[in-house]
Amino acid sequence: MKHLLPELPYSQYALAPAMSAETFEYHYGKHLQTYIDNLNRMIEGSPYEEMPLEDIVRKATGGIFNNAAQTWNHTFFFQTLTPEQKAIPEKLAAALTEAFGSVEAFKDEFTKSAISLFGSGWVWLAEDAEGKLSILQESNAGNPLTKGMKPLLTVDVWEHAYYIDYRNKRAAYVEAWWNLIDWEKVTERL
Ligand code: MN
Image 1 (tube, rainbow, N blue to C red):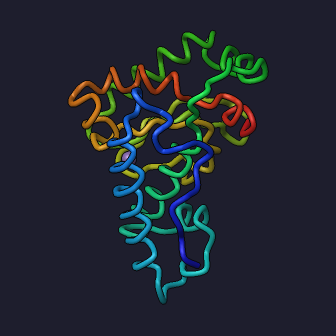
Image 2: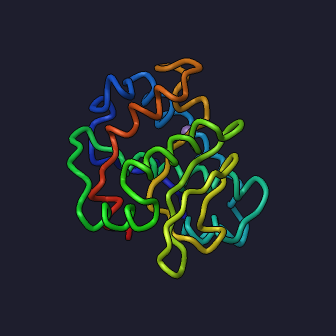
């Protein structure tokens, strides 16, 4: 099965200026495309060739894991963005309040995790088998699926995600990213 660049529910240029067309061209058009090309090349003739992407992420190690997880993570990340943000649905606000004290407390904790993650990686909001929500810092291509958890939301804190628009200012990128989240998508995953 050949993995393809995911279709997005918005134009590549719709998220500017928070996420510029140039960032999109590189991040989605080049970085993500390279992970997908690497994955397709590496799984050819392997037991992973016909496996759904999510199963490859759960089972693979090494280079196949890295490229499969980066493909999954970026697809999930980009598909959770919107140029027309709406308010957080009540169901999600209630779940965040139960887990973190308030929506604002969740955002503060998530932002701190995103800023403090050392090196490249992803910060996740994920739900465990008991329905408990938590924030996870994952290095490199890390993904909560490998811990048996369900990903709800993620932010990419690899430098390639923000260096064109924000240079070294990861905090400014994270602040802008909060305004691009499609909260309805996040709520559907609960
Ligand atoms: Mn990225």
